[in-house]
Amino acid sequence: MDMESQNIEKLFTRADGAYVFARWGRPIVPVVFGVDDASLAVFKGAIEAVVTLASHQMAETDPELGANLMIFFCQDWQEMTEVPHLDQLVPDLAPLVERLEQADANQYRIFRFDEAGAIRAAFVFLRMDDHLAAVPADTLALSQAVQTILLWSDRVFDDTPPLAMIADKAMLRPEIADVIRAAYDPVMPAMAQDASHALRLAARVRPPS
Image (cartoon, rainbow, N blue to C red; front, side, top):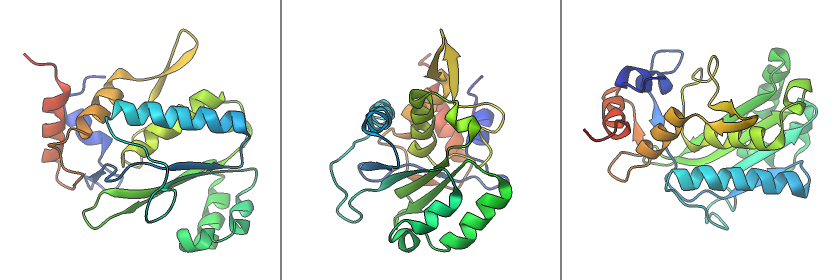
């Protein structure tokens, strides 16, 4: 994929036509519910790898939330309504669960933002249907880490996933890695709603002439 500004613009242009970009404005503190210790280590390792790629930071605790990247695994969406206090973190949880059931969805992400528009928290819900259960843990972990490091378009990875298989191993597509690096350049804004932002990203993705 050629990462010209038009293609970068598509990465952050939502289905309604709005350009919306955001990156994390604080260190990421992940917690994973519903997996064994081995899978937990795989997920935290994948998150750390993507955070390192972005030259961002992780931390042991978030002063406001304790953990600010929460990943929940379940076998059935109704399990989400039984998680203590989750309805306080995710307003309208019951209607959301109903919509996910009706759509037969197997994953969903919710982002929360600070006063400056930067990401302050993310909630990832994964229902382990036959499709997700067939995905290796390291592939699933890397995919989710990539999809939460930035606020991407709601349709960006519908046709082309962020990962590619190379020698039977899932790897982050180089062009997506380049955009992540550029997005976390200290001179770039933490939030943008103007497509001219894509031009600035493109200038940092292109190799020096």
